[in-house]
Length: 172
Length: 464
Image 1 (tube, one colour):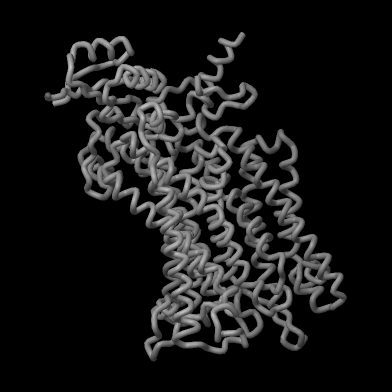
Image 2 (spheres, one colour):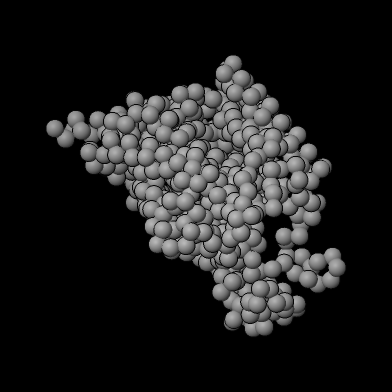
């Protein structure tokens, strides 16, 4: 059965939040919501699973830390040990305290940059990417809700009207 | 509903603003034309910058000998300016990261500009170590690449190399933190743009941000994690800068209080610079409704706290200098010797600017006064420059052998490069103020209902 997607525009975040809750309760499928700012509690109301991006950051941090350990061990201990001001240079453990600052910096460097790159890739954000918000007002003060239904469209439109949607149209 | 905030908290957005009003107010400086004052300021900054470039070219072409350095004082304005600029570059990340972790809503009115200021200040800071290498074409030697003559590597025991890693991590992480926050605001400008050229530019800059629910969820998570990473990072950067001095074996520098002392000083001077810029910006760009008395007062409180920490550090040094019982150490530290010696004026400039003047901020009348706050912020900027000058130059001017004692006098090149970086900083900031959304409007909209004056008033009326 083919389904129709309805775009409803709201002009208040609280009205939108209430509408999303009602639509979920009525078992409608919410396709997408475009908002000008993060609306508190909206992702819970729409039933969005948690993002796992923080976990990736942790993994990237571990990679950065390991890279720092490997790099400094290779350069300072394995490849070319030097006597610099009498500081111990023949085992990693003895020389390690001097390596702590760079271990920390590289952990942060890897975690931060790779996480942001992951975010840009997953959310499809890059230069020359075309914006996909259906209405330019959704970056200003309007909220656009896309709901799909395979049943009677009229019923959905009526429901959206009672939920104070400002404009309702069918997605082309 | 969920927007409740204790009525006793002062509003952070003044006036009867709607979401659309915020859009208009933030877009206004970008969409409007620059006035005469902007052009005058920009011209002055640009001339200073060009003069600075001239001095840098002269230095590189002729050699470091054109500076006022001598046998004893072999590090002076270059490193003073470096530490000064890095210190200034600490406020932005502190405001956006630490205050985010503490859920301080007032950061939202100022974080964008504070971060911009941070990034521009770190640019200036980065110039000095590169110029003072003398042979700038060998600057790539700081990278962990095998040496051209064999497999000799950089020295990871050296705090100067830690600096390279710390500053480049700090600059690049601050940059992506700032840019990620800018995406929704560039998208706002893109969707409003009328002129095709403007539309093109902001489409490119906004990376096609559409404001999907999932994007916002990730956006908030990324901001939170970046804040968590940037908080220890910002503390580590100035700690490592202080280690340039603290891990050396020169009396007066070889000191364990340096890391906390430098970090507090950095926040102190950074907040002062944010005050200087925002107090002008709120007037020039008509942002009085968003950068309010509350913001200024809160920043003054941070200045008072961090100023207190540096003052304790000065007192500690003063005591230790005397307690050592060594006439040499009693000069190299901030001490009786320094206060009465040939550099007495630099010592007292520090004490007056950083210790005495900020005490006026204990009075609510003064710390909520814009003119006084502006004046204090300038005084602190000067004082913090003298702090670095005192630590570096007073210390180096005297060794154990009286025959080698020297004074330092800067040449026009030293002064010129410093003026040039100030010019460069303002060139960047003035361009930013005309082309970027200077307030994180998307974030600000999310607190309008809880902290806007009109909404607070509405709730207050309903309660009675």
